[in-house]
Amino acid sequence: MRELKLITKGYAMTIEETLLQSFGPLLSISQLADILDRSPEGLRISLRNSSEWATRINQARLKIGRRVYFRTSEIAEVLSEDNDIDTRGSV
Image (tube, rainbow, N blue to C red; front, side, top):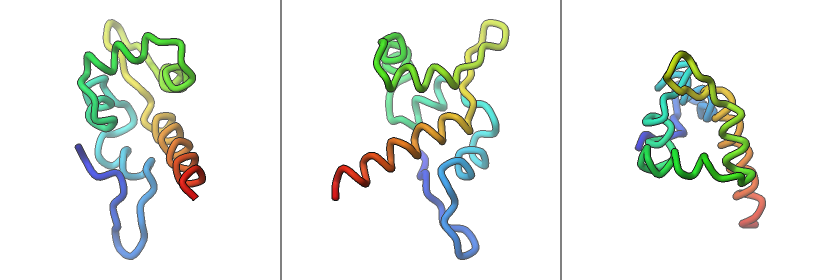
């Protein structure tokens, strides 16, 4: 799994900047699974649920032909929101 926070030239990159630099504007299911530390098949199963998390991830979904991608910027937003919730919840 890749580190989501990188320190470059004196400032910490945001999750979005890091993901865009590492993967580009679209994530494949296997790349997203790697980021979330899940197997691709486990992620597919999780995304079939009607949970709030699955709904938020599926909103970033983009189908091109038979291939499924996820918009990197929207995934970064979901991860940032989850990170904010975790930070506030642990205080």
